[in-house]
Image (cartoon, rainbow, N blue to C red; front, side, top):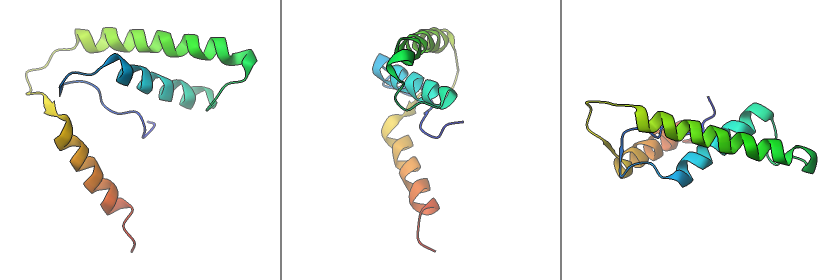
Length: 90
């Protein structure tokens, strides 16, 4: 999975449409191999981002869990600690 695509489910505060679109954009970039599509492919690329964002919103809205929502700040701190350990000079 693309490392730039983050888990969006079960957070407090809930995921925003901007975050869903950003994850959708990363997914389409990964699948297509384009960071920025050519003019000939731009319409298809943006349509794919829109469709994936819509499907993702539907999925997130329909999921249910009994687990307590995760705190965004705590999860970000954990991710920074993992990155610091992974990229620390050896």
